[in-house]
Amino acid sequence: QVQLVESGGGLVQPGGSLRLSCVASGSILSINAMGWYRQGPGKQRELVAAITSGGRTNIADAVKGRFTISRDNAKNTLTLQMTSLKPEDTAVYYCNANIIELRSLRSLDVWGQGPPVTVSS
Image 1 (cartoon, rainbow, N blue to C red):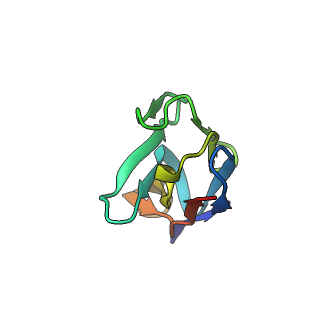
Image 2 (image 1 turned 90 degrees about the horizontal axis):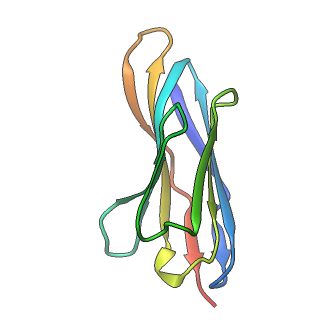
C-alpha cells in the first residue's frame, strides 16, 4: 500500500507564510511527478504547482513568485513554501504523486488527505 501524508496547514494572517510537507511511504519503486492542488470554497480543484523527478517545475500564475515547490527524492518528500499569502489562497491543499508500486510495478495516482489553509485576519 502506498500513501501520502501531509502536514503544515493552518490559520495564517494575510501576508504571512506557511510550509506544507508531504511524505510518501509504502511499497515504492519510484516516484514520477509530484504536485500540490487546492480546492477553495465553492471552487473546483486546481493545480498550484508541480515538479518532475528531475526538478522541473510548473507554477500556477496565481501563485507565481509567492509559492515555491521542491522535493527530496531520497526522502520521498514534497514541500510547498507559501509566502505573501492572500485570503484567496484559502483552500484545502492536496498533495499528489504518480508512484510506481514496487511489488506490482503499477503506476498509481495517489492523493493526500488535504490539510486546510486559511488566510484571514
